[in-house]
Image 1: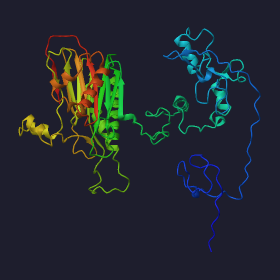
Image 2: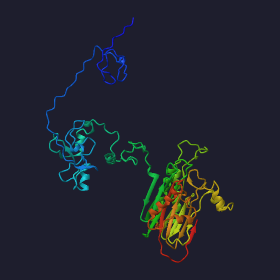
Image 3: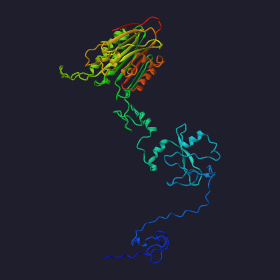
Image 4: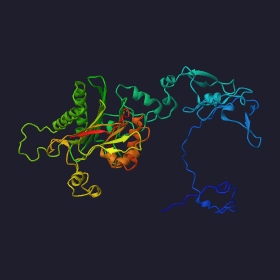
Length: 496
């Protein structure tokens, strides 16, 4: 059996607050359904209500003079101009955590402050002794707050963000983390966020950014030679390498050396092969030239030493069978080209398709390419089967026929000696550059006019020329200025 509860009498309509007439089911003013009002519960929980103590009687509020007015001449006050507290109970003159304190204007000094003083006061700038200032709050409505010196270390020691209830940032502050990471012994700073340390795998511990490898871009400059190598825009690593150095002949005259190597990408560990070849050739030249070895013979010996260094990378483990067809498969390999300037001679040597160009200081004089490629296209031209345009248009044009490596058919170092009669510039480069300036005239046009006096800048410009052209390969170039007194005679040349 259902029961209906009697609705309590309402003194006011819940919708419009008008008193309803006795027995009305709907409000005569707004039409509110008075029967829909829920009955008042018989047992209501009791809640304690805290009544704040009565505040002492205060006098009339004295508003301070506003420091500025808006366009309608209405005085404008700032929170720090008025006495009182914010929602956190702090005096309005005290800066909230994480904000800079605003300057307290003195009487008559607001308009006369200089811009430097305003910046220092508004930003909490440090003084000469590294001390910042913060406002010390006084009683509400009392005298102005007094600035006391506080060191930044004091804020950290006192709790910093933990005392204010704010969450500490998850990432380090880049203004301090960079110095902290750099101060650690042997630590490297991330090139992306400039705050995290780089782990042994080459990734930033803070943002995870992969760091550029040391060989991605290399530059070196001596007094009379400079070289630049770059990974390019398409390759995932730099497989080129170079070595530049200088020494003295037995008579005390200088000798300058430039070696450039290009790793064969289809071989294994081409970056190691080019580095080993460049280092071995350079060391061999620095050992033989001071002994009085003729530069051309020294270049031949250096190429042989470089070949042995690359061969050593393909050493097989004990027990490998001599007849095993895979014993030398995919062995490390590279090309090599080098130049020596010594005793008035210019000696070049090469194996592969890297090149040496001669660019005279007087650009009206003819330029020349001093090397011949060990490539399929060069063989077709030499055999008279194709002209140069047809050969280099073929897709097999850049297939090399000579290289340094354990799987090379036969080592045939090429050397040539020249005796220029005029000053000029020797350009030693890989195909990553000459692919974008193939002829001697195109290479001379790409070389900046001041490259003879600024070889490093000239090498940087040539690398940029290749990158602007597409940067499909690693790019390496060494520039060797050749200075002689004009003799008026033609140049003598010996080639092997």
